Image 1: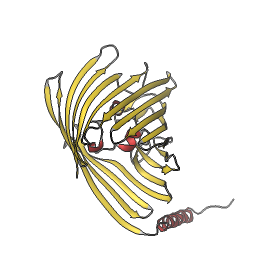
Image 2: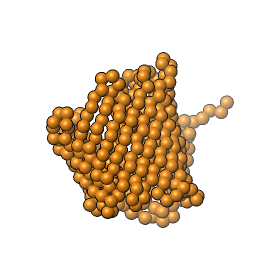
Image 3: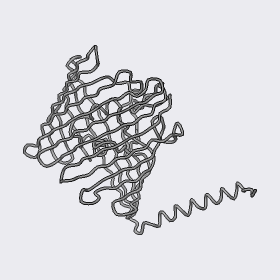
Image 4: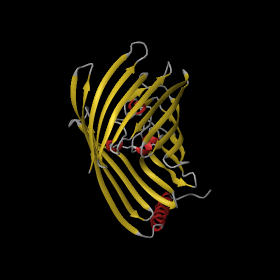
Length: 350
């Protein structure tokens, strides 16, 4: 049997890697080196009726960078400064996205890095700049960490293909419980998303997120806990319609967590948003949220929640918004907890 020299093998691998990188970079003919840096910040106040307490709040300061390195290769980076009670300084800097993209054919792209998981319309469209949120905050299915916000890995995507303007994302990445540097087990998560736009302003979409989770994991929100090994399947669908006068967004997710001990437990989460523009600058809106956990759920730690939101958004200009919002929330199964909050948010871009 022929023996393989480890040194020569290592040199060959390095040489092939250099050739691959060189060929990859040479596919882009024109160097652009165009970088744009933007920022977003929001501050606000809320009144808690139960505690009879007025609170002033700093939300997030978002640094958003886009760079066209050539006519084929681009980079997107997003970092957020936000409050963290566990940090010595009480504030953390979080790398939310770092994406290298290669446009290999027309509207088809290869991408790699840390991305917002292509699970639903909200996660695709609204990132960390509250300026662009239709409401003060994210829907309840995000607040209870049912949606996997970020994934680190690589994949393929396409946008506005054909007459139906089809979009797709196929991705392989580190699963839940992993870090941005390494996976915590041999399994990977898989993301499949498809959407299309049959008429102007309307987008219909669906997605599948699959993962195998070890017994000691970080949940979607970053908390650490001990659970049984879980096979997770998250299935989502969305309808979005945004035109000059009418704004409508409805999304639903069904998350099935399967364990060897108790079988499959299903969590349902959904929300619906409707806004109507008045005189260009004012948008009164409503939103309804519902999260329902099946009895015996072992992975998620949230509680059944129903929430009603009424608000008014005033768009001073395209870089400044003011939102007034009232929320009524009912949480729990037997011992229900009712909360009432009033929010004021001022968000800008710069």
